[in-house]
Length: 301
Ligand SMILES: [Zn+2]
Image 1 (cartoon, rainbow, N blue to C red):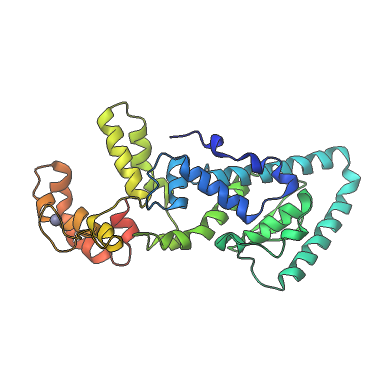
Image 2: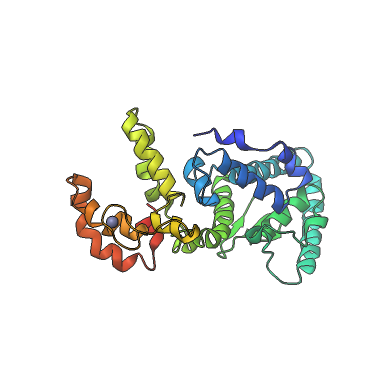
């Protein structure tokens, strides 16, 4: 696993002041996924970054954390050293917010979902407008410098930026991840992800295996990461893309060896004398019923 900081690009240095375009965030995601060690063929970029670096530690999450921490540090300094300017700041914030809402014409800015240009790009000049623009792009309503509403309608009210902002930072990163889940759900066996991921449960096994020094556990870990990232290639996935390749199961002869067959229904695999297989065979009917609507749960680990 690469250290997540090593994937940050030189192009994002100084971003709190210069601003961040959707293209730069996209490139940060791509670079993170490339450095993850997960095989690139067929993997989901977002999920790869989340499982390797953590849902709050992937490259874009780090950029957002750094970005908003810089803002709150600047704000705290202003309040301490030049408190008389705070009312001016409130006015400038409100004016800029109003201008940006007019530019967006009452529509939600979806540029971070589609990684395209934003109507706000030309109007983000300096840290205040960058913070405002980023919040609007993340679906927040930052109506005042000290009063922000998240996409779920919950309101954060700060007292001169001296409060603990850690929960707010997590909420902001959640907003970014939530914007990406519908896209991740389009990926191989990704249906179900659009409603969000319970990361604490999802990553439990992976985190415990990472502590092991046994080489056989490292092999299992690599397989699990590949599966979760959507980079596994059941024979039917290969055959669907390459016309000269079969879709048949090489173990039992079933015509179509898709992920449901290989992980749950293959007669050859299910008869293997292994505790992990024999104990989970009772779940086969449930897997077949639920994998249609929730393949992310039954087929992606
Ligand atoms: Zn089979």
